[in-house]
Structures are given as C-alpha cells and as structure tokens.
Amino acid sequence: MRKKEKLSAKIYDYTKICKSVMASDPKIRFAGVINERGRLVAGGMKENINALESEKDDEMIFMELALRVKMRKEFDKQLGPVNFAMASRERALAISVIINDDILYVVSEPDADYGVLPKKIIKIINS
Image (cartoon, rainbow, N blue to C red; front, side, top):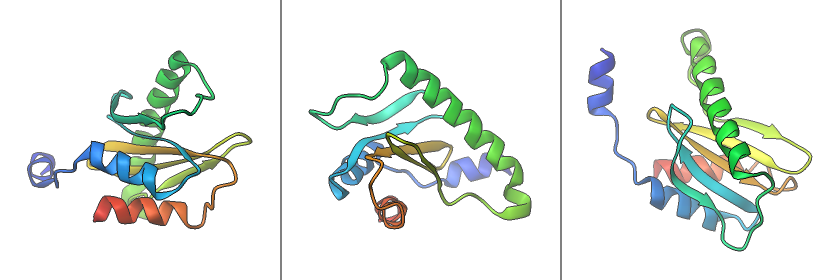
C-alpha cells in the first residue's frame, strides 16, 4: 500500500511554493523544503536578510525537524495527520507543513501573525 501512495502522490513545484510563501508576507525570513533526511532541497533565505544561525546550525535544525516530523507521524492513526506545527521562539516563529514525504519549513519574524500565517501557507500549497 505504501508504494501506491507514493505513485499517486501529487507533484509539487517546491521552488514556486517557496517563492509564493516568501512573497505572501513581508515578515517571512526563510521558506525551504526539507527532505525526510533533513536536507534542504528547495528555497532558502530571503534576499538581504541576515541568518540568525550558522550554516552548520541550519543542518542540525533541518535534521532535528525531519526527526520530529517522523516521530509525530506515530500518532497519525489515533489523532489524524498533522496539518502544521508551529514553534514560537524569542527571535523567530517557525512553521512546518508536510508535503508528501517532505517538509515545508517557514521562518518569520517573531511578531508575525501566527493565526493567519499557517492558513496562508496551506492555501499556497493547495493552490
């Protein structure tokens, strides 16, 4: 059954999604797609924005995110799949959304509207 799911999975243009997400809100700093192994496969930092962390830290964040997403899937049967996950930090707001077996990871300024932003992101993915 798992193989069939992969064959029928919708094809997404990750680069286009990342660009659309970045353009959707001026407070967004980063929009990228991370694969299940924690590697960035599309998108990245908005131009003229200084990163909050080093490139090495990015790699660790991406791998940790991929692991966290895998662990959350353990409860899909009981609770249903995760629509999105959000972490509010002192210096950033981070949102992750599953696309097939990959993760759209969006980071914004901490004062972004966390009630609106996830809905905007999901609408872009589904359009």
